[in-house]
Image (cartoon, rainbow, N blue to C red; front, side, top):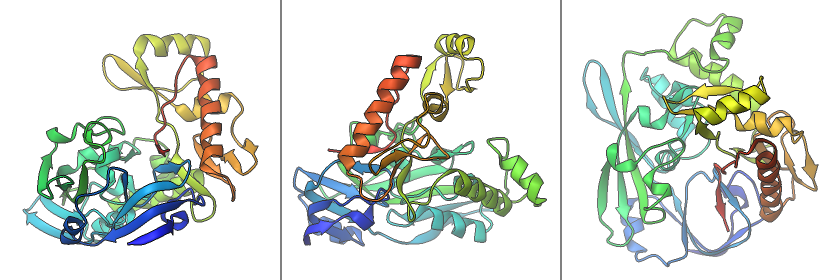
Length: 332
């Protein structure tokens, strides 16, 4: 247990914040020993999807549970059990080395494996739920490890039950993913196909991963160089009638089908149209190449970044009638 522990290097915004108490756990038995937890606690993975607006006056528990193992296998698939403290991108690279398909489009997403189902991470036409089998999580009241199947998790766009009714009540210890030995390539989303053509790369899970890494590197800033949490806002999902009305007024607005009732809009486009790209106020700003990414230029506070985010929300709502919802967890 550490008192007044700095969290600056443990989250990707790189803010000067502290936790009143901090502990890391590398195994389920270690976690069970510190139960019951105080009411004010926070589970930390890779720290890539949170904004601290001030010091955290409670206990931060850092998930450092490691391990990757194949627990089932047949001619077509493998079931992989992964520790929640593993780095997501390192898991992707491991799967590619084994020639297991399913994670390649999710390359270079920051964060930990344990946080992936909470957020139902997704990118370039793929989501965690596409390969998810089940997860193991410790009930923080009882200390019992419980299993959550696909239906139990309530997956939606960047959502799960662990962001809702079960928030803070469970600690995800292991995630089981079903990967394929026979790849079905997904290159229709974004610029993947163009990158493959430009690089003249033969189609494979490795070439798709490399293409995604190239695209993400060009579009998104490296948190090691400038503090950020990737996409700050969710792409809004609206009724088709709302999307059509916006298309009539703004013909160039990107609109993506979701189902028979809803369309998805590009939050970055909405923000960009209002001139926010590259905006800076003190050390809080909007990235110069990607309007969806808020950045810490060095010494911004969480309060300053959150204030900027709320300014952006207000301007988008005023112009387009759309309230952007943060994808990042705001720790107040």
